[in-house]
Amino acid sequence: MFNLILQELKSIKSNQSNSDEALKVISSSVKALNDRVLGQGKTMTSLNQAMNTLNGNLNTVTSDVKSQGAIIGGLNTRIAAIEKSLSEAVHCPPPTTTPLALNDITH
Image 1: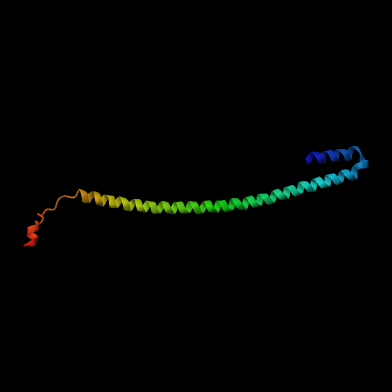
Image 2 (image 1 turned 120 degrees about the vertical axis):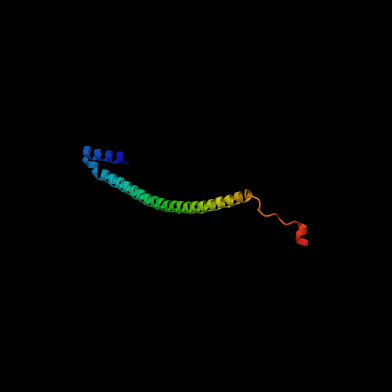
């Protein structure tokens, strides 16, 4: 596109009789370039909106993962406490009193 514009400018410089046609070609080329730039601007705006949406979604996922991490951390603390209680129960010393025999209960 730029080469076409340069070519037409050279044509105007070397041949004044054909300048109207060359200017029309240049004008049309500049308009086409302008349209392409505007189209790319719209594409960039759409891309920017999509990136903002993606960023928002990533922030939500990050927040959810942090929340789940806190929940898992709390569960791990509770599990550790249960494991400790069970471990202490398994290793607890025998009772100091003699358990009752079955016939002691029935008489």
